[in-house]
Length: 150
Length: 150
DNA sequence: CCACTTTTACCCACTTTTACCCAAGAAAAG
DNA sequence: CTTTTCTTGGGTAAAAGTGGGTAAAAGTGG
Image (cartoon, rainbow over all chains, first blue to last red; front, side, top):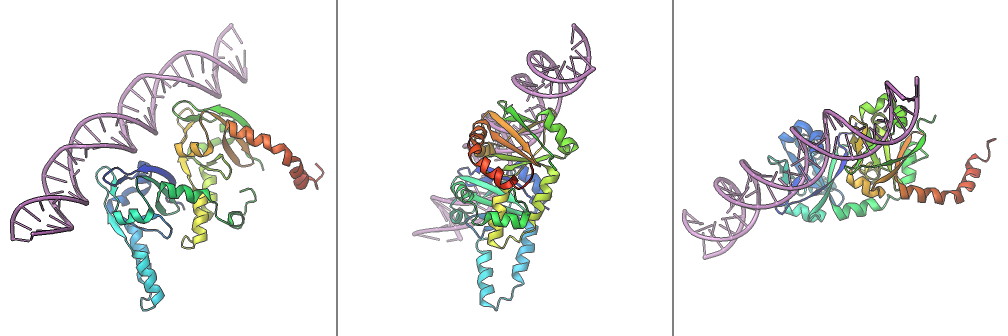
């Protein structure tokens, strides 16, 4: 089931605060109060997790056998920059500078929520990403959706 | 079986509200009350789904393992901009700005319903699309329908 | 360890947008 | 011609979003 949906255009103020849109907040529900975690995504974007979900994911990563070099490298890469956040009274989060740089975020930001992911993109990067359809989209669509008309 | 049919010319008011024509509403039936989802189409138009149908479609995509890059890209491209909507008491929906831009919608809009799709086009884009059709249409028709006794 | 600068947290006030409601005009039905 | 349904428009209160002041906290250098 799809927890999060929507694409939200937001703008950082000059204190680097990012307001979480009300619609998204409602989707998050009570969990916001337990805090959020922001991390680098696997692509040039950031990912926002509710505390609980973060714990679940990081537990999985922690169960990897860290004596295996590849696992160790993955774990290190995975956790890089993960930062706990607490929204203020106006539901704004303060974006960590290093993460902003990673995603190329300056002012205009797109929050993109799908499945149980919440991604944060620099607007230009988002548009560039969306402009180019994945290579074999049609093939995948047919395979996954079984529709010919997509 | 074809659920929806019709081509409706509608106009947004200056609050960006779009009224769903009564005829279409009747085709949608009770489902409207459960809400709708609007999303970018694969052409320069928007697509409107009854909540239920949206869930059916998106469930499949949600089952993808998002740690696989190709899946992630597919899901992203698929969900882009999906936004839940609830018609107001006069059966009007508030069009999200980003989606309007995507489809080039300003005031005049064509709602085009066929199969179990409801597409929303900017009027000019719709006309352009329809104008360009006839050329390939004959060929396609022949290819697709030609072997039947139509 | 202290003085000073920068960053962050918290608060308040203002603007814009949205949801909700009501009603009148237009079109269709009887 | 009257009644009903459909459509359009707009007023308004509440919600969402924006901006900034300021004090506390954290960081920095001597």
